[in-house]
Image 1 (spheres, rainbow, N blue to C red):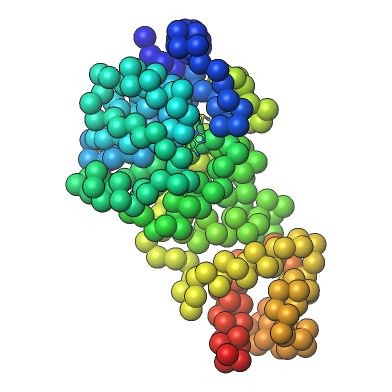
Image 2: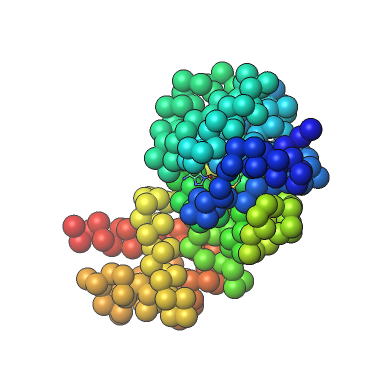
Length: 291
Ligand code: SAM
């Protein structure tokens, strides 16, 4: 019987006397229908290798093993390792690594274990308490990962996919959309998990862009500036930038913004990535020229 149903999940938990740890964001999937949709969204075949974050007792891993050429799964909880070794024994191409994904050297792992595959996908039901650091860490590391198909809180999914001018649009939307096209693929209700989380979930597909949407002089500076412009959401870009650039007067900032046709009274939430790109470059030049 598959792992992903409520009675088998309960039986495995009882057999190994497994205790759920809230601190690790453990909500195990028990619904074959959702898993089939995740596999479909991930567009897997035997030429694709998958990196899974947090396999739990292997509900998703089992589906990934059937569809992909190889699965490397990082699990932080030592209590889950013997369970995974047993349930994954029939799948020789599944490798479980007992490590915190935030500390793991994923780049070296890819070079040694996955370099022969045509594509690499991250597919995961993420631990919600660290969705952003996991995603941003992997995306910004510029690894050869083609797509991410990841379950997260619906609220975070909305932020990642938000358009300028909407209430969900923030610095994270821009940081993610700079690197990836983002689509919410599946809405997931609470009752398909054991234990049920407090919030609704969604599966998001992030596909790596071949080119960033704007060419800027310094990407790290662009991201800093975006964060600065959203620091106080209700403040104008002028006021947020004045707080950020202590060495520039409001008049100087206003002049620079007007030079690139940006109204100083606008708020960060109304600006596109392209507009942020222009702001980043004009301020970068100014700062560099001052030494
Ligand atoms: N994939 C399983 C499923 O869908 O049933 C479990 C998903 S559960 C939401 C998140 C999993 O991530 C848990 O197994 C948890 O122990 C693991 N986890 C939490 N923090 C982690 C970290 N920093 N590194 C690796 N795994 C982690």
